[in-house]
Image (cartoon, rainbow, N blue to C red; front, side):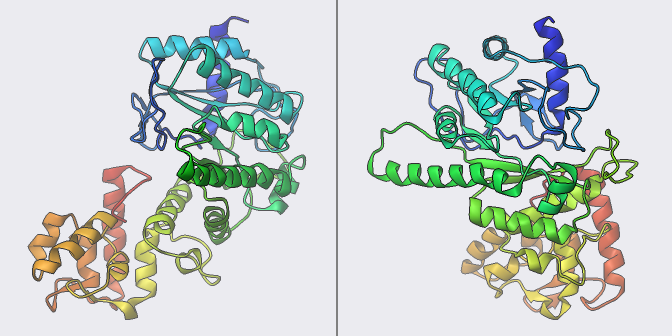
Length: 414
């Protein structure tokens, strides 16, 4: 099979893995090819609007596992291909020289065993770093079941790793991916977390030490292939951020391309649910919310018509309206329509005097929503009071219009 034909198969097979990002690394150029920058790299647009230029492929779509939801599962009748380490290196370097890409995202099916597959991934990384002197961004997979010695070697060459947890519970793993276990998945995640922490601690005392996964680790969760509630998924996400120090949790709406007795009968991917998870994830990471605040046992799933921050505010109307010139930063963050940057600007500028309604608009506050949950120097600007039953309908219509306009999963002003 020609290398171009292999590339077509393996690039297409990699499209279901969304756990890639090009930011967070600062690998300097020491006379070789490329640079990895903390600000990210551009040229290719992803489905959610981010612009990156990664060569995103699988090393092989052959796999010893038979996960029911996976298009590359062992029992699926699909064209198979494998790129050798030398071919992947050739593609990466040649694409870089043509200015097509600035980095590599390399995943793989499990060929023979986790150790054997990881050894091939390491060979790719070593050839790029040591033979080709490639200093660009490299993101590879940490494969569950791999010997820690191999994971340690992999971490010395890559900028970021991702250990995909895939399904939100051990019960779902047993049902849809019986060859995988929670323990096997969490082991490499724990290893990378501890090794990254050790590297950062050592770097405080010895500046010139070899880097180890400088951009941290991520994971991916498939949404909709199993029966967990949104609350279960969000609680898991919170736990992963706290215990594994993940940079990101990525959510992938299940695409119903496979048939299986244990798979849900979906007509289309649950993209709206994926969107709500990203919005709630943003609240966890930047807005000081807890998972059990966003979703409760009584309301375990997201409101399809309203974003999580507005839903929380409506659930806690007794806390509003908030006086914008006196409220603490933590409470300002919880006002719908005020993002992190706007909240910081409000706190900074009101040191010099009370802010006016017009000033808030210039700061970047989305007043169409925020006005219902705040007062400005004692004055309330909303058309309805915070306890009005009509307020929910007003917010739904405004939110729907905004989401159509922005068409983005990553709204920083939620």
